[in-house]
Length: 329
Image 1 (tube, one colour):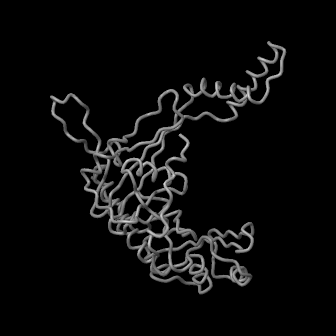
Image 2 (cartoon, helix red, strand yellow):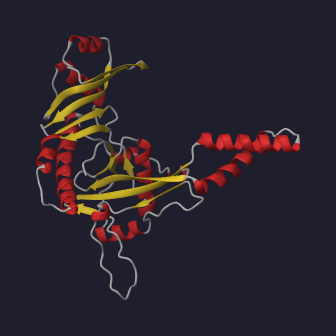
Image 3 (cartoon, one colour):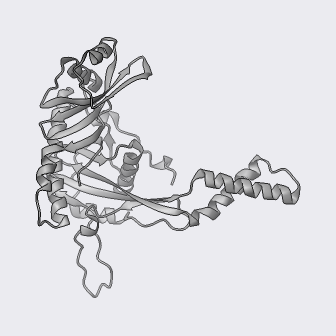
């Protein structure tokens, strides 16, 4: 259940859609596998997976019970998007195309030029796609009504955007902005590193990434290293700024904070250890308890983090564009 990487989005308005209505809208975009000629599909999946309780239906309906596509604890709504992709490497298509081109040139004693090669490649791709293996993945996220945020468990901005686009397709619109603080995260974390200590219950951990503001290729990466050292001081004195800093918040959550406010390598230290000691719980009960603990801890950490960086700006001023029309399925 525990999220490992976070991409954060600030909601432009409170999310007040009733859960029953949200369930109905999610059901309109439920996951289905790729058909023979689809490269990829994405849709909603029960967050609890096989452990999810089912909606009962009468025997007269003669239909399979519908999965529950949300998991709600207090002010937090868990969602899960499932994506299936057909795996057809470009090298396979190129090799098959080259063989087809060579065969035509040999049989017809003529040269195959670029435009015809593209047509042959398209035909080869279409013929190979139905035979390609499929791979499924899940993207978890939750809407925090308490923090007015969408929190996506992904290190990839592209994956988080795919989730966001699915949510927009489902709800019609979902205006959000990337979090933007009044003080520069890089500047604040650089000050923490210079002082050898953080603020608001943040302690400096043993990972960092320093970058030269005038040369993005000039990067220093430290992992598992004592950061209060002459070496780090020399880099800071030379003008390098923090791009990534490992921190421990409130002795509970350790993570790497990026200068764009994405969060990586989250570990729930004491909380997870305490949960692992519990026994005699069903998978659904364990999921529920872990989700509640995780969201409460993260909510507290977000508040402390944004306060450290001077508070959040108004998301309405910098809404993200709706990129649904730019997707390639």
